[in-house]
Structures are given as C-alpha cells and as structure tokens.
Image (cartoon, rainbow, N blue to C red; front, side, top):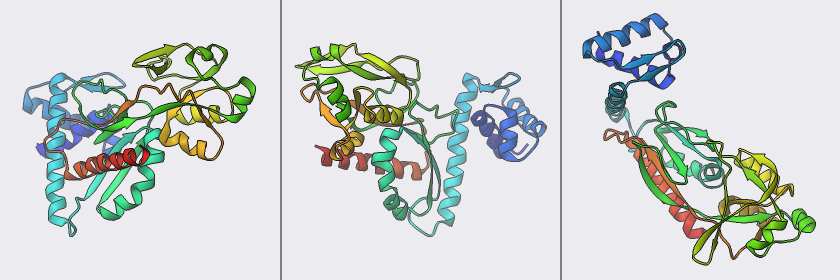
Length: 301
C-alpha cells in the first residue's frame, strides 16, 4: 500500500463526506477508494470512518488522523512549492469562507493588490453569511462575525464590526423617525433569521447597559443582502454594519436613526484548525486580513 496515496484518498473521503464524492473528485472508482481506505484502516488497526449508505463521517480517532494527514500532505505540498517557486511568495490555493458583509465592502476591493503582491497564491472564496464547517467544506480558514463558539478552532481576532440602525427616507416619511427606544413601539423592523432559526434580537446600548427591544415586523429574511434591500425599499428599520450602510447614507438612500443608541459591536475573527504545519500561504493571507481590517477600522473611526 502506498500510504501517502491512501492518506490523500482518505482526506478526500472526509472532505467529500462520501466515498462516491471522493471518487468523483479523484477521477477513480468507488471500489478503488473503498479498497484504499480499508487498507489504511487495516494497517492502522483503527476504524477511521462511520459509514452509512449516503454519508461517511470520521470517528474521533479518524478526525484526529484526518487533521494530521492534512498537515502532512500540506507540508509535502509546501516542500514541492518551495523547490519550484521562483518568487518569494508561497504557491498554492487558499480556500476561505467569509460573510458578504465582510467580503464585499472590505476584502474584495483590496484583493487586486494582494494578488499582485502574491502572484503564486490562488484564492477560492466562498461567500456564506451562515457559519461554514471547515472540515466538511475543506476550508483553510474562515472569517467569523460574532462570538466563535465552535470547539477545536483557533480564533484570531482582527477587530470589531460596528452596527447601527438605519431607515430609508420613504420609511421616515411614512412612520416618522424614532429618537428614543420607547419610540420603537410605533415602528416596524425587518427581522433577520439566523442559521439556528433564532430571530436576531434588536439590541441597543442605553447608558452603560444593553437593552433588548421587541419590534413589530412584516417581513423575515435570512440573507444580509436581502436585509439591506428591504431597508432600502422602506419595509422597516434595519441594523447593519457601518462599512456597508454608510455608503447608502452618503448617497441619500438611508438615514442613520437612534444615533444615541448604538448596537453591541461584534468581534471579527479569522478561524482555522490548530495545525502547526499550516501552509505559509494561509498565514500570509491571515496576516493580510488582520492588517486590512485594522486599517479600515482606523479609517472608520
């Protein structure tokens, strides 16, 4: 058995969550994938996968083995890249997930310079407003807005996401402008559903304490762009990041309201698996994100 090849096959099975998916990615047969994983389990004397007819999920030992395999294989890739590279930057692809509220106003506009400075790096960016599973989706890292609650991840805080309340001129004309939290009893908001199904609460800083307010709503959304579109259409008050919504204020399409009652700033973090052999290119990208966000926070303040 070629153990390195077997490791590569096993990693693809975990990332594809099935033998069939791994076979498609590797352009081989399901039978071949099955034989290599079985040979690997036999060699180790450990069950690596719990199998069903539709899905394969690593056991606890299998998950630990997967993480070590990823580290070893990436280290081999880095050795090859270092030997082949003619430039100082590291060669290879980075798979990253981030919410649109970070990607569109902050990261994407600056990517031309990053890629010009790092021509050997290719980025595979997944825009996901809900949290992505790094292992299941084969991600090198992800950007999180809000507390990081997943166990087993390293979280590097890069800054905070400042949120305020906004209303369109059409909404204010129809309902008036709220000036205090008590005024909100006469107003409606656009409700936002989280991945868990929980409706995001309306939170405000009043004095030195945070206060949660119940707000009537005529519409429920589960996507950040749709939330903004509803606010622009005058369907209700919205809360959102100043990075995105202040541009609409400058264009006259939105107004800031309840300026004396900001929302709770949420931490912004880059998360990744605790892997000491993480490719250098991933560290380059993470460090760039930290510097970029720090610069934008300084410009915003």
